[in-house]
Image (cartoon, rainbow, N blue to C red; front, side):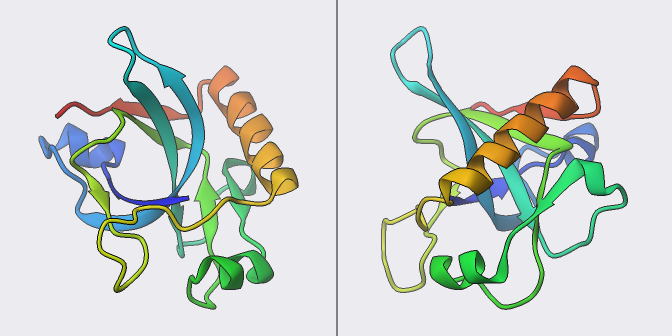
Length: 135
């Protein structure tokens, strides 16, 4: 997980180039671009309950505590993703007081696998929007 200025699809449609809120995001995929830089795909994590439970995965309270996140309920949203070259200008320090550290920690394997498989399903059903970010 990283902290990132996630740009929602609706924000991009309004002409914004940067997200209006920095938020924790789950890194769902890392690939190699043509110039050998990593291309990272992230999903946003939010406190807002999903309108459709099929489009989100709730983070367990124990996982949130281990990551140093607050105690409020949170969901990984599967309906929106951002892709960007690593490292990108929209990375933010993830842990208060730790200057350049943008990562929180790894999500548990089973949870990450559930998120990955459900995101693939949402993509196949064309229920997700992916915003490609550039510098």
